[in-house]
Image (cartoon, rainbow, N blue to C red; front, side):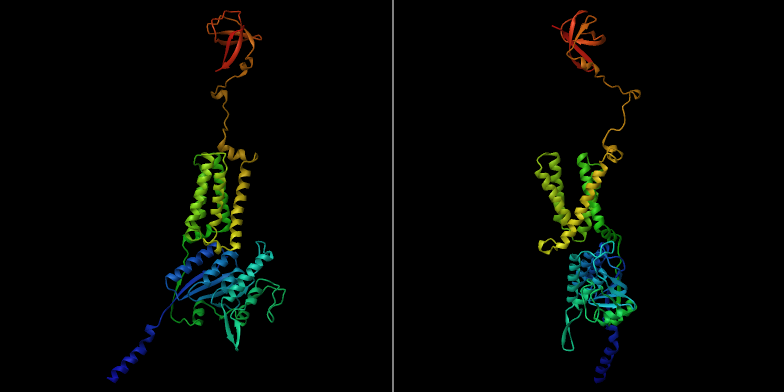
Length: 454
């Protein structure tokens, strides 16, 4: 009996590796500029990782940065992800990339890699005004603070020092022993390890997982579909502004030449491309789209049913504008809306509207209009006599009210003389003999009408 028990225990011990738990690793590559497409990919990757029961979400980072608003959305998703998030900085995690790396639970860097330089700049690489830097400083600081504190030599210290995060944004921030007040902070791998912003160096994905203690794992890599690329493309702020421009342009020209023509097709297609990605990603709710349609109906009602009232048309325009702005705001509760998000949405819709006004003015101008708009809205061909067209001569109408003389007897029709000129005429009274003075009373259907001059 004892031998059997010992044999069973030995069999279990030997068989333990066969029952070892395999880690499910979900891998997301971020190696492009941070933007709408990156956010769409990250959003779907996080969703798929949750649904597949992943134990680790691994980000393979190599980016010089991108737009702050999309980096902030990615940061929020990573901070709220239920499983450990690990970042492997393969070469660069600059600007918005540094914010994303900072949101991860663990960071590993390839030797020679760098992380930092998160100052907000414009397209000319010039630093934006301080209000933008202030927002970025607060976002970096809050992200660092989210990692909490730890005990080191009986002292409570931050796991990620928030002051260092601010120094990556603002050159005025001083971190004693690290950087003075004249430079924006960028870490090398060794510096990041020393100051607690990196857990260690690694040379590959496998090396990262090995250093994390994952010896038995299965990697599932995110694969973007063509739908993801389209949604990311049409979620780009510049593309959204162009779509708004086409919506306004199409509505304007359709209302000036009604009949569901080319302008209305452009407006409808642009509206679909504008709202559909927002609806699919969950940013725009159904009521936003309904509000836009109601606004459009009110505007059409004002134009065709009760023109001149103004109130209904104004309400329709306000509803459409509110829907365009609301579609860009994530969340339906006013308390959830950040002022920066509101300003961004207003900037996109406003710039699209301004572009539409400029385009409308340009296309209807005297210089360009006849070549484009008037070609489709005005009669361009001349109706020439040699082509068979006959015009109506209105010259005889100038004789209305004048006195004339019947040249022939007028049994209704006959001839009269006016100022030495002979004209055909019709009597609207009794029979008129030749030589009788008559008066021209009207000119209709290319014919003079006379009566006896009393």
